[in-house]
Amino acid sequence: GNLQVKPDRVSFNTLLLAWSKAKGANAGKRVTELLETMQKMADNGDEDVRPDHVSMTTVINTLAMSAKKNRSNPKQAESIISRMEDNKEAALRPDVVTYTAVMKCWMECGSLRAAGRAVEIIDKLHQRYEDGYLECKPDTLAYNVALNAIAKSRAIEGGAEHAEALLGRMQDRFVAGDRDVAPSARS
Image 1 (cartoon, rainbow, N blue to C red):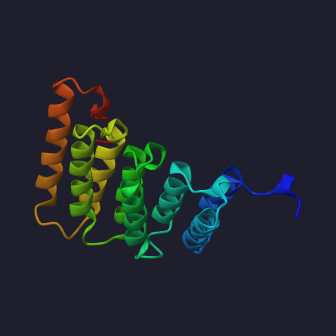
Image 2 (cartoon, rainbow, N blue to C red):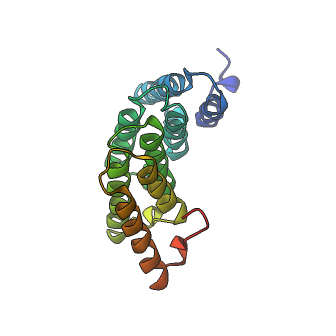
């Protein structure tokens, strides 16, 4: 073939983005397949298509958008984020946006674990940030998604109390000077 028209990471990321905008039920399946194709090509020596942070976060966001139709999507999202966490390259590590997308995936699938998992992810974000992963600093959006997951969950006993406690944590951090977690009208 013509090497001048060889697909690269940007080509694949553009295709992933296009699929993320598709309304069909198979978007999550298709982006997962494309991510696997990218990884296989990279494993076979084509470094130009190695998935990056954008690739993986786009796939997780797409899984979140189709989670109502496919309740296994949160497990797929968790698998992807685990791969990212295990990666030694800083450019491939998950950030607050990636973790927020995983929380959305849990929330959208309607799983009984969604609320608890959202709180665990907020805790993980704080821990990673304290461990020096500055890209994991929780922000208002992350807290709002976690609060929404609690509010939508029917499984968590004392959900209102859990939501209020999480909002209290958010407010305490804001009062202590963390402007990235300023409670908003959605909080």
